[in-house]
Amino acid sequence: MKKIPLILAVCALAAISVRAQKVQVVDDEGLGVPLASILTEDGVMIGTTNLGGYFDMAGAQKVVVTHVAYKPLTISAATIQNGRVVMENQDYSIGEITITPKQYIYVETYYRVYVYRNDSLCYFLTGIMPNAYDPQKKKLEHGSYYHAYAEYAPKLGVAVNWGVRAQRLHAGLVQTGGSSDKFLKDKYYITATEKSPNHKVFSNPKGIVGNRIISNGQSHLTLDGGKMQMYVNEAKGQTKLLQARQEKGYQYQYSLIYIGDDGKDYDVSNFVMKSDHWEYNDKKSHVKFIIEGYAVDHAYVNKEEWKSKKDELKKAYKSIGSLSRLEEYEKQHNIPALAPTVRQAVLKLKLQ
Image (tube, rainbow, N blue to C red; front, side, top):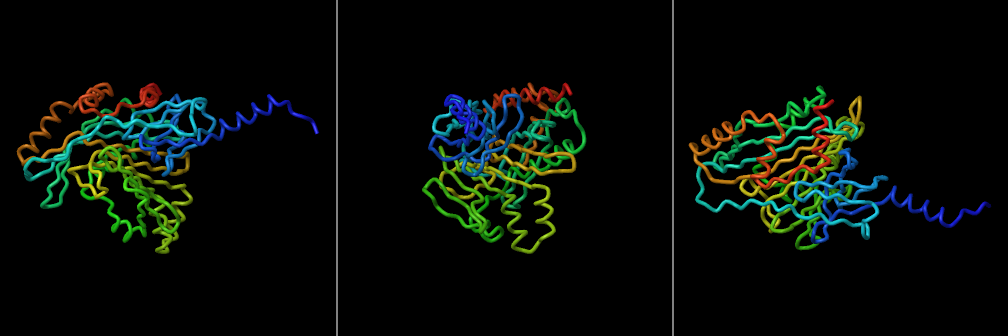
């Protein structure tokens, strides 16, 4: 048998290691960060971290990791230590409401919508939306959307259709109640297990489907909605719907962050941010949709104050027209900036 020189064998093993290098993204307490987006240097999305915070470098020498709750992180395959990288918490928080309640709870939110086709960005939308919740009537009201998108939607069709749908779904990012353990058990057959005081794991008969991590006074809840929904389809004998989702490679995960370190449910008064991820195969390609929502203001307001807040936003942002205009708003409200690679991918859209 022909001998292979030692140096060539070492190089070959190193190449295999780089191609298949598994990396765990963790927070400053060493807990895995799920649902972080992994992108190449030119903004192509490789995938997302799983519920344990793991992803595969897939041959990339350098990647950018982004998540709504953490600062963007650029990592190199050659500099990863012990298969782990630590994301730094975004210096971002809003205080719980402590003043005397009025008729409405006001929540001003900032949103972003991304659509990827075969891992390349093809649509981007970002903007502001005022919301008011009436606790007595249990009713959520919305103002108008103020956004910049015309420059960033060069390809019509499914991207724009989903962009509009995502914009409507944005209202759902400001929700009126959390995914309580009882609700998950009754509707999705989910069991909750305490791993530590700061870590709860959610499972169904098929395996782990989510977790709740308490970090820096905030609760981070991440659930694999696709696995949850498809198990319900299976348990209820909904074979056609289950088969359709399996054939399309349907996936849906979401991550929710709210104020409070007691692990209790959230409501609109302590909502901080949320990220929803969908993906599936259509007739042409693999499509991914990501929606991010950030709360920038909480307050109790009466009817007149609610109207005034809507009017002020309309006056200031009715005609935004550019991404840079909204970036001023981001800085004013301490919203995490787009990772440079993502911003470059956004700006390239208007050149296509």
